[in-house]
Amino acid sequence: MLNQVLVSFGSPAATQRVIAGVQADGTCWCGGTQWQGRAAMRISVSSWATTEEDVERSLGAMLRIAGGREAR
Image (cartoon, rainbow, N blue to C red):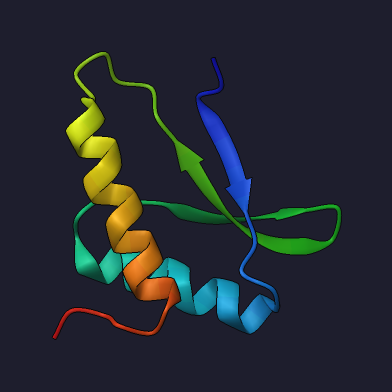
């Protein structure tokens, strides 16, 4: 099982925008990192208390924000 995943949203600016949006949204928290010289969002799941519903809700927020539909 992987507990850390890196995701890029194309350009460094788009990746940073999604990271900032996810952090502001508050559904979950993901940080930024660099991998092989590219900006990436680090997703880390390490709590035994994380449920499938938590994962689905977090993924939904990430996809919504990546699609430019941040919560207002």
